[in-house]
Length: 71
Image (tube, rainbow, N blue to C red; front, side):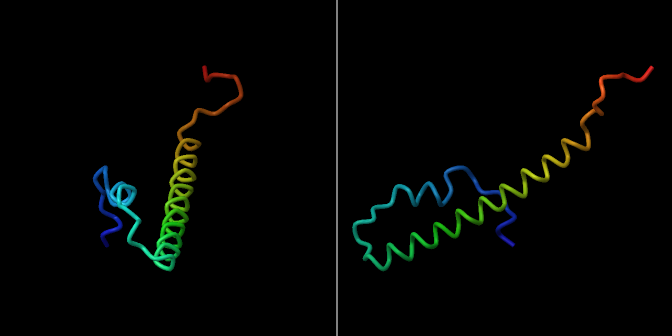
């Protein structure tokens, strides 16, 4: 699945931001907005999962608290 492959910096989002929107109709712009909102939701969801995974890993390797050190 191509979604698993790393993407180089300057990927599709960067290209989209530089594209002229003058030739798009209102319907096409609405469609584009919806697609971008869906993509934002997908990225945020993935980021949240990655953050939760990182937090779980950090807590696993974090030294126990309690203020005492073993002898």
